[in-house]
Amino acid sequence: MLTILFDGIAYGMVLFVLACGLSITLGLMNFVNLAHGVFAMVGGYVTAILMNRLGVPFLATLPFAFLVPAAFGLVLERTLYQRLYNRNHLDQVLFTIGLVFMAIAAVDYVMGSQPQLIQLPSWLRGRVDVFGVQIGLYRSFIIVVCGFLVVGLQFVLAKTRFGAQLRAAVDDARVARGLGINTSLVFAATFAAGSGLAGLGGALGAEILGLDPTFPLKFLIYFMIVVTVGGTSSLTGPFFASLLLGIADVAGKYYVPSLGAFVIYTVMIVVLVFRPQGLFVKAR
Amino acid sequence: MQGTPTEIATRHLAETSRWKPMEFVFWLVAFGAIWLLPSHHLILNEIIITALFAMSLDLILGYAGIASLGHAAFFGFGAYFAGIFAIRVIGDPLTGLVLATLASGALGFITSFLVLRGVDLARLMVTLGVALVLGEIANKMTWLTGGADGLQGVVMGPVLGLFEFDLYGRTAYVYSLVITFLLFLMARRIVVSPFGLSLRTIRDNPLRARAIGIPVNRRLIAVYTLAAAYAGAAGALLAQTTQFVSLDVIALHRSADVLLMLVIGGTGYLYGGFAGAIVFKVLQDVISNWTPQYWTFWIGLILVILVLIGRERMNHRAAVLWARLRGKPEPRPRTIVGGH
Image 1: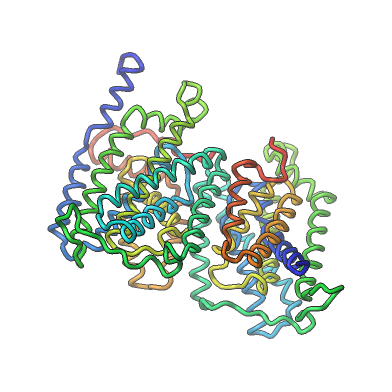
Image 2: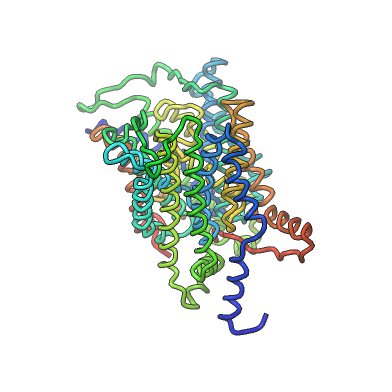
């Protein structure tokens, strides 16, 4: 029971790291980026390639799993995404779905369609028994890392100058521009950071979520649930939504496997119907 | 162009409802294909069914401005309904088709209330969610749907008790074509009626539409139900003519594909679905012959390029070119379907 809760929390933490970038870009630029999972996949593959082909230790691959997708995201943002900021959502959806299709086929072509395995270092494998509760070492590692990330993100957002500019731009991009904030720069930096975080989430989560070329499509719906249920105006909403989703999904798969993903989809629809702005946001 | 608003509107509707020469050509070719392309009936059948499906999406996207990421929900529901009906009740195609259409319409009616609640992104997600839930149900109710193995053992009786389905798809194509043509006639009548005009008003400006007394919600529910019924009919046709239903009919990529077809063909004139389906199927055939495993890459690339060039601009260019060819004044650019 507590083990399930624990696994659920770890799962939720990974989901949050994966999806928080999406939530910011959606809130900031009102841009529906269905291709967010592509960056997560890039991060996962960076780690897999570095470890399996070049023998780099797991921890040392994590910075690259952040940096490569971040750079990739920055390039895409500057060249393609920014042209679509003031298009309607249908165009954005079509464009990003197109990107997802391309990414899936490209990764399949380069790496093959088989799932990638990541060998965890021995000190992260296994479980320990704490007061009768089975605790997976890797999952505790994830919770600690993601916990630091959450605190760090909250700090950047709440206490730094950049965070203040970002929040201003989210609230009202026009007024923020009028006050001399270079919103385009803020957008680009945020997009890159969000992509990087997704990549890091992809690398950390490869063990739990699995990693193969269909990753962006398979987890697209999870990201979207986090974002739509959590709302896009803060980080706390998506954070709680991720935890909720993680726990519900793990518990659901354990207790009522016959229902499958049915429960979370239904919950999403119900939330969307009654609280279109998200569960943790006051309706404006 | 003088007269009271009612007269102007009536004249406008009468003008748009007149059949253009190209339309006659199109349907003559479609029916001519029965005799002219006897060896391609299977693929033609697939194209015409996909076109009907795309047309159903056009009804809500092109005319009412509702973007849906889960239109395959109704297509899949219709397909499963028709397939299961044939197995468990009777194999008469027309009965199954009518019932599947009605049932999909009913499902559309129920879900339309969910769709109406949200705007924009929430709406997209709800449509997607409905399709996912239905897909999951179809996947888990193995005793009824066959689950991941697909629905097997569908045996159809002859159409009208006269025409057996044959191996070469001749009956299948004629059957699908006639049904599609009838449904098209109905849709065409609907979109040039005052009802259709009010839909376009809602699409262009829901706020003003409400202000001049159009019951926006009721109209949207009506057209969503209609589109769901049409999609269900397309699904039923597929199930009956291929005598097999798999989870593929309700998958996300089917919703995305049909959206792509409509975008290729253009929205808001009913033929977009047909043009898009033809281009899409031919492309799919060519590309997957050339590189079977990676054809989604090229489909993705087409999507990206289409959006970057701009759907509206492209459609407008085509319209200008068309007008020039016929020596008519150039049409003004139209504001088209918008999220916000």
